[in-house]
Length: 299
Image (cartoon, rainbow, N blue to C red; front, side, top):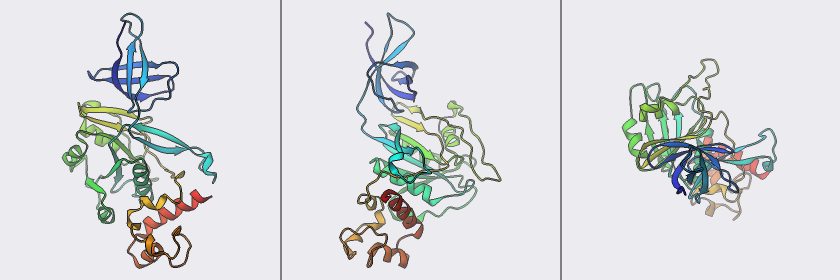
C-alpha cells in the first residue's frame, strides 16, 4: 500500500489541489472524502491512487497555525453579515504589503486595511515600497509606529537583497493592489518562475489582474512565497468595535485619558484620541481609516 507523503498546497480548487512535495515535485491531487476546504499554504498529505498509479488523493489537512483572510460578498450593502471571510493563505509568518511609489497612486487607506488584517491574523506585516525609482514616498509615520519597510525597484534594481533577506526562512504572502508590481518582484526573486506581468493604464492609473488565484513559489527549502491576486478595493469588517483600537498602535495609552471608559473615539466629548488628531499627533488619514471601519462595523 502506498504511503502518505507530506506537502504544501500550492494551488487550491474545490476538488483538485496542486501539492508541492518535499522533493520539489508538484502533483495534482483530488480532495479525499470528508475533508474540509483546502487553501494555499495548507500542510497536507497525499497518496498515490491504486498500485503505483499516476493519480493522487489528498488524504489529510494539517492544523493551521495562522491564516490570512479578506472579505468577499456584496460590498454595496451595509449589513456586515452579507460579507464572508475568505481565507487566502495559511501557515504564514509574514505578510508583505506591496505598495507603489507611483503608478498606481498610493492609497493610505488600502495600506491601513492590509496592516489591520495582518495584525488581526496575528501575522507580522512588512511594507514593501516598490517602484521607488519613479518617486519618493514618505512613510515615516509608519516607521514611527514600528512597521518594517523595504524599498525596492525591479528596474534599477534597488532593495531586492533587502527584501530577500526579510523573507528568507519564512513563509510569506505577498498582497497589494493590482499594478503595484508584486509579480515583477517575484520574477526578480525567482527568475525561473517566468510569471506573467501586466501594466498600469495611463488613463485609469489602475493595474490589471495578472495573478488570478493564489499560488506558492519555493525559493529554497526554507523560504516559501505565496502570491495572491491584486485588489482594487479591500474592505475590512467583522472586527468588534471594542477590539478595533488595538490595531492602531498610535492609540496606545490615550484611551486612559478619555472621559468615558468605553469611548469609541468617534463622537464622545473629551476624547484623547480625537484631541491627538486635532493636534497633529495622530495622522488624520490613519484616523479616517479607523473612523470608516468603526462606523461600518457598528451598522
